[in-house]
Length: 170
Image 1 (cartoon, rainbow, N blue to C red):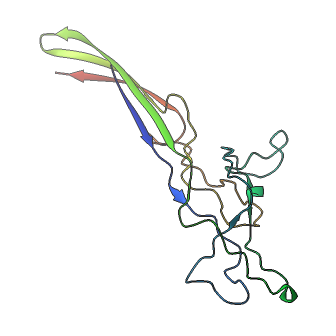
Image 2 (image 1 turned 90 degrees about the horizontal axis):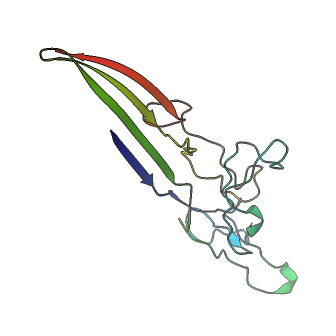
Image 3 (image 1 turned 120 degrees about the horizontal axis):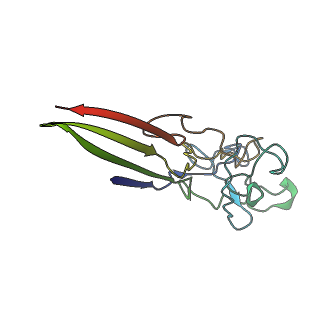
């Protein structure tokens, strides 16, 4: 009998604005990050399609209402723009947790020969293996949702799989 437990923490990700311009100038090189307007709330959803969780879709990984694009006041207000208050890799995506186990028994046949039977189970608890971070660009139709999943079947990763086997040693 043996077992193996693996836990991998989630990958970091950034929530970005859907435009990299504030006041028609880029406030730095590369990505403009989003404005956090409410406390970050992880909802832990992982369904492919957005929508009401009781109908056809699922919950987002995080609350999309917590984020907005950075804003700038009207030109007549003579105020400075509101710059983003989030930064690169501030948030974490889903973690992976897998438990594998096997049981085997040998039966003596003749002299040194033996017949062994085995039972092996991979991802026993059938945890979802989400191999990507949520869509993290403000304003998109799938903003906050995870739309890419791990393999449906694989011996080392994916949905729960069971296998039986026999082996003759001589």
